[in-house]
Length: 243
Image (cartoon, rainbow, N blue to C red; front, side, top):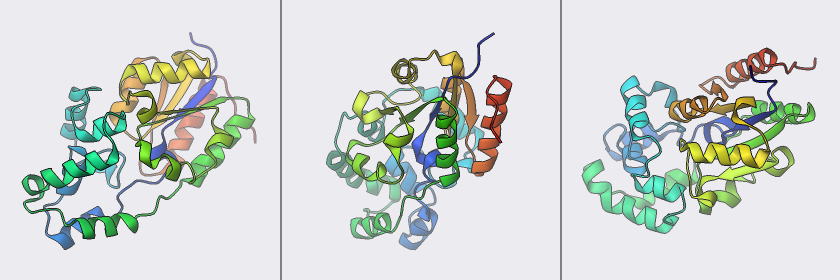
């Protein structure tokens, strides 16, 4: 039987931060694009986990994502592992747009939409992470992210104060749910996977962590529900919360 939990690894987008692309449905409607088409264009799947509405992904969407495993099959994946830069990715988006949207992408309207999309933070999660650190648990952050966005997202909360290890997919050339990136994060934390609790909003990423022996929390629409599940795991695995 594994011993007490020694470390907690958090995702960033949709866990530390609030879901991305708030209002994308309204943007599609205003522009006359088919529902879900913008997410399909950007990420290769209309129900991309990590954006607003992620909890409404169908079973088929999750199964389709799981079948792809950790394959780098779309420009978004290539961007996340640092194979291409943001400019090349955006050029591909513009090129693919007519086939996906049924019309060229109105880049002016799109970038205006992006500029009005602030990154929110689930401060309850940040505060709980600080509490876990103060209780002696090791903390890691494992994020599928974009190199050019690093300076921006790192200013949204005190990353280096809370997390002794930060693994960004675009820096290490691997992205969740590739098992190698979970193992790398554990190695940098100095722990085995079976004494780790992992928190992510993507079903596929959670399943990959579980397959490696980690305790897992799927982060849904309610941050407090996810934190309560994490507390139950920690208590069951010998880490009691201070009152």
